Image 1: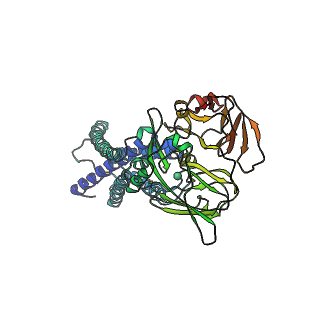
Image 2: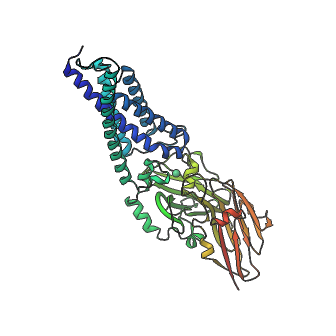
Image 3: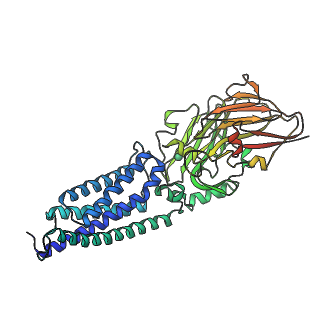
Length: 481
Ligand SMILES: [Cu+2]
């Protein structure tokens, strides 16, 4: 039988353990909704952890048995192990390793403290502190004790709540405070700007999110001739987070290639050597996965590029046509929907007939992160070409490289008013086309459209999925005489 000093010591350790269990429990409870929106498994895990820890907090503050010590210990060991695993390797339901963030470290600190308390209590063999000798027996006594214990537990829970609040406040200040957008705290850090590489790139791309410039801007890279006579084209692409205004007054926390959504239109000619120097300026792993022909290790799938990592994609451009590229980090839906997407054009060796060429990437934006698009655009800003019509001339041959990079919706489409166009599906054949006024593209499909207007005037073009056009995918060709 331990003496009174020992009992008081055990009580102190129990109280400390109770506070730490409440801290971790409240943090898990606060983070559960955001994780639920991310994926159900993660949400249930957080809610379950919160329930177990809060129950431990209550039990440790009242009359814990050795079973509660064992239960608490097994919980913290699981939580610490899961945290260590999700920060170091790719896992099902979670995807690529997540970055280590302040809130996680503080919570794990609390859990390690809790673990040490529980180990001490277990070893002390003090299942229940003995009731004071003066206490009367009977139901009245039990009531008196439980009232005192209730007050103690209430105070402990309050302390735990304050601790959890302090941890979460610190985290919200570290991020952009956009937890209400459904972001998990680990992503908040990724939304902040200011890394030197990012500033340098923003200076290189002053026309970020200017769809009129983007429309006709083709990145041919830095060309040089190799000793064997082959042309080498060197491109520079950096992934970094950027807030982009995707509709009037709607700012989307995008992940970008070179500061725009879509990223640069990379263009070369069949037979040339392509070298894309990719830097990851984000706090999450990313890749560039190009569609088309290239070696396995240039496919941007298994070689994940970590934050601050660098990778050079190099291959010889084969099979002319219009392709696309996007990040291929899990979950791919998210990495594309967040903005890591673009067009890749391989011209046929002799080129195509002269034309007024433009690229149109059809995509959607999901600013409330419910995995449904609220806005649809061509080239990143809803209704942009409706408010800023594209000027073309009567009789002028117009060529559109059309790409569908819409996530969450199976198809997208392009419809031209007052005219028909020649449709070259994927652009991999010069002779095979159909004549139509509407084309439907599935996710990842693309086409080349050619047309000329015989009459001047204003002509609409838009998705013939009318919901999409009403949500921003609509534009105007201003045909000048
Ligand atoms: Cu990515």
